[in-house]
Length: 358
View (cartoon, helix red, strand yellow):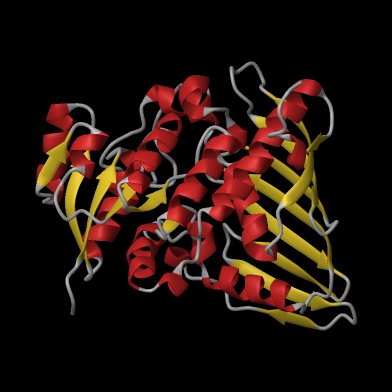
């Protein structure tokens, strides 16, 4: 075994301590040198509890550690751009949490920085790492479904309490987490960007491009805040680059015991049905022939440690990158266009998002 990849985690909060830090500590070819948290006492405590050598309070302090090669940016969304940009400019490989940034322009700038430096740059989306995701992506891109004409997505996850700024008990970890999110992380628009659209639809938007290799070209959206500062219920209608139609319905206002992530892909030769939270997948040809794939084990349904593991694997072999940051850019295009559409009441063409205002 060669030298291990020396890495650090910026923003050692609830998700980093639940997913990213344990993943890096478990990887035989990773060496977790440092974590960053703005509160000095909490930073020292996290470092001590996880056996990490350096406890840093600033991004620059962590990035200046000699020999550091890669970082995970797992801070609040409003800090992603600044911190990822600093890391990329210093030649570090980066995994950034979703949503990638708060604006499309920022996301595209980060991607350009990574490309110029020939760096591995990943967006943290665990759904891209399931066995079903790999098969579905291959089938769609290889044309097993024929031409994709329509995709329907229903995505619910009980996070509305976070968006409303109330109880901060996280749901992904079943409430049994080392830390809890700060109240403002999901509920303050200056920090979160938006509600359900930034917190959850970002997963859907990235997954669409992950599956099809296509980005959205047009978005029409409606949001309902249900008395909150930020959106709780979202409905989006998309047109993809190849003309395929997409409908997305998503909300965080659902039972704590009920998560739904249903993706139905309709092609000219067949239909693919995935239920991501239940770990099921079925392909139905137009002649009625059905192929049901083995259900995923519970632990394989949402592989939360996979993004950080894939960061290390991708540095060692770039062909291993299963979730390139270009997917985060595609998601940000949908998010920003949806926000503009919901505010204006008009259809938004994504190529027009960055056109200079006259």
